[in-house]
Length: 281
Image 1 (cartoon, rainbow, N blue to C red):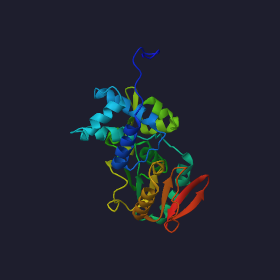
Image 2 (tube, rainbow, N blue to C red):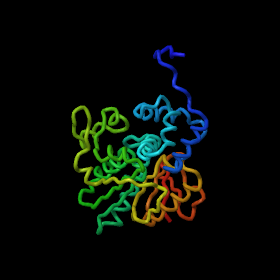
Image 3 (cartoon, rainbow, N blue to C red):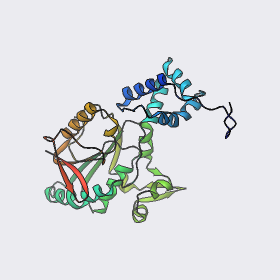
Image 4 (cartoon, rainbow, N blue to C red):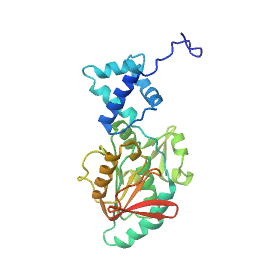
């Protein structure tokens, strides 16, 4: 039967066996757990990939994924399913806490060294890492050696982060006009981050399930709004690994629905204004 809106046959819903197959692929490829009620997410995010492959539906896409030579296609599927929402200065109370408490303490402690190292562990398209760079630039740390690492599993979003170019709708969300005009320049219809901030930040691909001993030590780690997608054993392992990358007294910032539950020996929960941070012990 044709759709009354498009005149085209309706797209078949994902078959349950294919849904479980996709759940398994995403879990094996990223560690992310997608629950049973996320059919719409696969249909929304994989529909364009299916069409690009000449597949009439996500069910047909699954047949291609089961076939030989599907490595590149699998990578595209994983990337589509691991693209998370981000925007500039998300959860501003945490940035206020960094500016009002962490930075003054580090300034006093590091007056001789003048070095600061931070990690945005689920950087996506880069807004979080560049937001942190803006906060640090606003605090007059121009004579400090500031290094901000942004990592993500998804190569496609990292390409956008490195390009540092954002659409008008992206800079309108969360970013004060004064900061936009100070740290961005016009690039056609878009906005591009200026060299001052870009020099502070570098991006690389990284799977949070991998050992982290190659990173750090960091004064500050952002791992926000990503742990909720992992199962409990994976969350614990990631938080233990992150602890090993932090200086003693370094801060871990998580999303509002996340906490290092059961790891009290590693992290002290601390309220700073209206923000919650976790201090490495």
